[in-house]
Image (tube, rainbow, N blue to C red; front, side, top):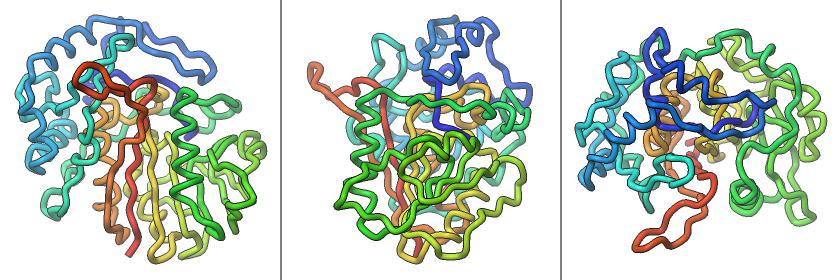
Length: 344
């Protein structure tokens, strides 16, 4: 699972049934270009979804206030029911639409408020998960798809800088042992004399990419999607930090992977999951492509809570660059978000 490569439109809500209902005309508007990031160029599906989303008012923010509404959303995803409802209780308050891409973006504070302060153990959205929730358009072995190295960034320069600054200046501390899950040719760690890391292990899919990563002190190739019983090749409590960048949407066994991340993380250690809305369409799971960024955030938080890994203090943060536009601060360029948690 490499870093992401395509811009995701919320029209991918159509991609939730076992047969992966996606409008052929819309799919044909995407072009594969060796992993380089491309944007959608239209299609009737986007117009349909846009007209549905446009009728929703500010009451949509109830999603971030009431877990019951989240549960209804995820249950509808898991059983493959329609997501094109205009019901305010089923649509989030992502009120700003990028005029160039048509992507709906969260308003200020919406990402941070998308996770509950207290989790309800009876509200696990994955108990009713169907096959389509974690299946993909391309179900062939990942080793085939990722055989060729991709030495490119999959978010724009400002998102790369935001990710690098967050990881280097806030997440990591001198002397840390770090695991970079789904690693690639870069871990977005700023190499400096002040940040002397004890160990940086990279786990990825392409040996040439991993070998070229200057931050790694060691690396290994492992397909996290090959078997449901995932076992990371590390001892218990080996790392101070586990991070996963722009790849969580490709995991077909995310709860098992997060459980293993907890096993290799030291008590009191931190896990950080960074994500955007770019992806390789054919390799992302149906649950992810059928959601917007607020729902993505809740999904990632749910992975951490319901994986039985002992994670606590689960928080979300919007790292996107914003600028003033009228009365609102809107995201410019590629968005970037992070969900973090601490191991008890």
